[in-house]
Structure formats: C-alpha cells, structure tokens
Length: 381
Image 1 (cartoon, rainbow, N blue to C red):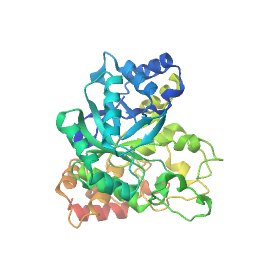
Image 2: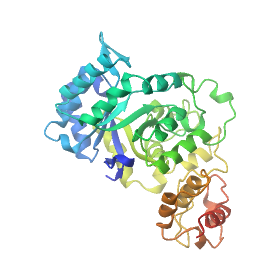
Image 3: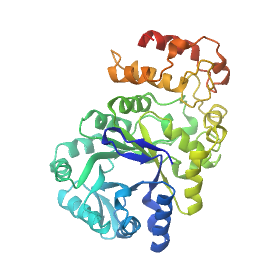
Image 4: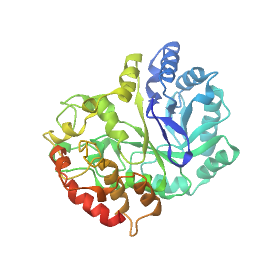
C-alpha cells in the first residue's frame, strides 16, 4: 500500500480508503472482520458519516486494540433521531451525536472532525456564522478532533473551505462523470438531461478547485469515486462506456490535491480488487483511453495528467510538469511553493527537445511540446 500526506494535516493516509456506509447492511461480526481485513491490507483511513449505532459499533470493534493505526473521518452534525439519519446544525443534537461516536468507537478523539455535508451557500453561511462552528472549534481546541475537515459535493463550497485558512481537508465527490458537470446545490439533479447537454472536458470550477487545494495544501479524500457503481456499466455510465474500478481509482488519485479514495466494500474480494491498484499495470489503470473513445463528452485538448505521454526521451515527468503549469497560471505571480516543487522535479520543461513523441500517445490531442515551451518560459527553466 502506498501512503500520501493529507495536506496540512500531516497525516499519512492509504491511497485506498474505506467508505463505511455499507457496513450497516451486514452482520456485525462479518462487518468487523471485513474492516479488519482491509486494515491488514494496508488501508488505514475510514469515513464514518453514518449516525446509526450499528455502523459506529462495527468500526469501534474493528479498531479495538489498534486505534492508533486508524485515521477516522467522523462527521459533526450527522445525527440519529427516531431511528433515522438527520443532518443538523443544532449544537445540542450535534454534541450528543459526537459524544456517541466517541463512546461507540471506544476512543477519546477523532482524527478528522468533518463539518458534515455542506452543499448550499445558505448552509455554509449558517455554519460559519453560528454556534455550530464555535462547537467545531471547541472540539479542536480540546483535542477531541485533531483536524478540521468538511464534506461537500459542490466545488463552490469546497473553494470557500480551501480558502478559509482553518479547514485542513475536504471530502469531495470525484469521478470522471462528476468532473464534467457544473456546480450545483442539488446533487440529485446533477445528471438530469445529461445525454442532451454539450459538455466538453473537466468543468473549470472543478479543475480550479483541485489546483487551489494543491496550492493551499488542503488535502482531499474522495467519495463517490464509482458513482454508485454506475460507471461500471455502459448502460448507466454517462459516457456511454464502462469503466473498471481500477480506472476510477486512478482517475481520482491523479487529481491535484487528492490523497485517498474511499471505496465502499461488501466483501473481502472487493477489498482485494481495490488494493490491487497498487500493483496494477498502466494498461489496467488507463482511464484516458476509455474517455477518449467514449461516444459522449470527450476531454479533447485537456491534460488529465493520465501519464500516457510517457516515456520521455529526456526523462521529463510531463504529467507533473503540466500540473505545476496549471497551478501557476491560475495566479498573477508564480507562487514560490509551486516553483520550488517544479524545480524539485530535477528535469524541467526546458529539457524538452520538441520531438512530439508524447503527442502521438496523448489520447486527448494535447499539444505537449507547446505547453513545455510555455512552462519553461513561465518558470524560467
């Protein structure tokens, strides 16, 4: 298993994480064994947005004796009322639910205290200007949450979170289909009329969000990476073609700022299939060819950092150079941190000899040599 630093939290999280929302539908002993099995495979981050007692008990029992090996995303404002889930900003209800998660998980802290599910601007404003956010800050000051995060599906809310200065990481929905869509406050309506729309490439707000998170060192963990399994069937995929789990995982992990993708698991075989990403071949992870050949909505002309351009005769890491270029051009002046990371690559864009061999391999027709020239001019090397 490979591990990545989750932004400014400094936490080392496994590239493959555990999204826990399916735990409730399993026998408790079976679910505890499943989570422990994932831990044995190197998975060390688990999301618990679920307020139901069963899911929380399962995670607590699975971590017992090994709490320090797990990184928990625990949500503040996800409550269990009259036997059902209710999102709330009421501090008394949020506090009771948070104390419940500590008790059921047999711990005195949560690694990532998540401001739970903010998709609407009005809700963001309410959270940021009420005793709810003061409660979150109090938990942080007391050490009951080690870091402050937020979960959202809306890139406009995520942007505000990344710029806030105190939110350290974001749980965000990422897959090739979602990335095509503009921001919305209503996730359920995101794909209405999708097949009639004319969208091409990654939505600019989403691309800018990933670059902003990379620049601000705000870590991203990924939810809905498989679009509820709809990406795996050509009939339900918005692209009209099927993707594999490995392709969806690789897509998410190649977005700037992303540290981990949280997958939903029902069986040990599914855990094995996801963890197989770490030893998969480039061909097995190749999402770019699938998108490029899809009958709907190709990303023509856009670099998706897929790595198809390799190998370079000058050993330029073209995908990473393109990432840093995209980060830099968003700013009026090249940030020193971006320049330092770019220079740390060793072989920079100025080494490009213009052979354009990479362009013949690019599924999206990116004019790589031209971008290398612009990058070398921008960074001065």
